[in-house]
Length: 499
Ligand SMILES: O=C(O)[C@@H](O)[C@H](O)[C@H](O)C(=O)CO
Image (cartoon, rainbow, N blue to C red; front, side, top):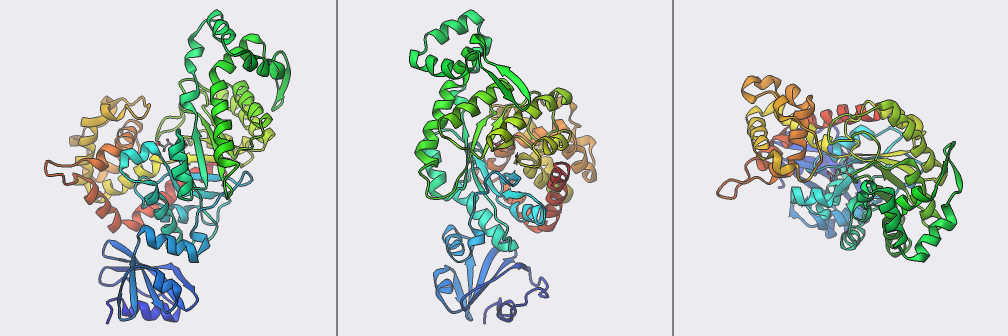
């Protein structure tokens, strides 16, 4: 007799909605699925999730798990995820193209996607549930298989059939691109920052002219024949590239454009499926001038590329986990041009470090005409921390203190202007006030945001995790609270974006 016999019987009858959680077992009713004579449902037994399978047929046989009383309890392994993908196509990541708004929902923990699905369901936006950069994988110790597994199982758990994407984010080298494509990623964000030479900006006009003159003649003639002293209308604004402006842009962006063309021709054009190809030129030392964005776009399309989205670096500060910092009026003026360029070429404008940029979301939604890609990641981690701070103050205090002690180390990975002196001392904050005091204050948000890797990988002298195990255990017990926190916080993002 299986311990899951009651649930299995309800599954066979096709009605699990009235099964109450018992003996630490939770049933996810939206996961009830069938293929042939096999029915499935996802459960959580204490803190471990399984897919229960009943019936007879290839699906039952192909899933790996332990069988008792005719019920197979299948762990959420990579192998079982591939079986679920084979029989339920809505659990497979997909590309979306340029005509619908998408939101990147980077989940550094692998447990946020059910809450993300509950947030986007019914809205005119589609989620990129599996979105992690190599930087995040290195800091969390996860891999791309785990990232996609978590998203696929979440779609199964929630019975989410509107589609979700998987973004290999900020990829810089071909090995990572090949890895992501091989694992079924449907979006690639090509990070071109290593090929963008911002030091050019600091040279004198004479020094720039000398460097430009040293370029191969065919390169100079290529750009001069296309752009020199020609007037272009960009989103209603007139732009002319004189010799100095053209030379500067070719020096800064020329190698990056060649890199974009190489990757597109080698991997995107030849792919056996639709790939949403994003160009990221946002992680650079200086903002992307609108005319530079235009030159990159014009050159790419002249070379036969078509892209899904482009992420320029906007003026002002898009720092991690906090609102926009800068002159919103000037930001809007340039945003109109950036959005107009994207519109003219038919791709979407992508907003990186989109977490919590509440003051500029309305104008982003307006000027992109609701066709945007906004990326978040850190804010989802912070909602998990907020949840823990509310129910496990002792754990939060230990994490907060560890973050303070290792903050400088974390600034090697992310640019922030955090002022630690403005963060309230732990001993002056009551347990009940931890979440509001720290998760609603910019400096504390950034302290916890950029130390995520340090906190998740911290170990004691015996090699036992200092925080990670208890952190995940707390969140498993607080699954609904974490989901509600995401629904509220990411919901606020989408409301202000007009979605
Ligand atoms: O932290 C990272 O590496 C990513 O989340 C990266 O910042 C991402 O492209 C992003 O912009 C999330 O808001």
